[in-house]
Image: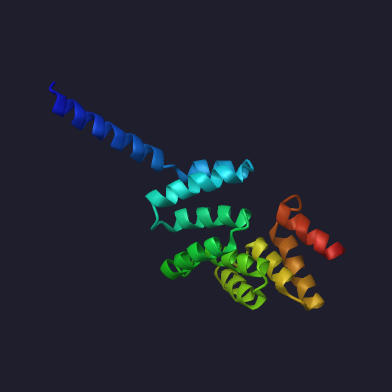
Length: 167
């Protein structure tokens, strides 16, 4: 094998190694997220979204990690792109609503959360975040009761609803 052929093979090998490295599976991002290693999850999510930026799932998982890291503007941008491409994605609508509530844009949050519940009326976290955005105590109680109907008592969502009801 001549020198030129070896250089071509080495260049191809480096390209394949780079492609394998950048093609981080979403499962690795999710695993790091659930293990609480948010810095690693963000690094992997950024690598994945570079590789697969047009995937609704890639943008959603990356937005979820960014939300957990408090990077609301970046998460909102990804979620808006998801909703533009897939307007019936209740997960993205919910997370966008949650982001809006967290940054104090309650009216925007309520709109997104209500749309999410129109698409999936059985998603307890949307009721919880809608309750957090609602000033009316009677309406808030009803929303929190919905959470408890939808969620098992030992889930974080149900525990938060019970804490809010006790307050």
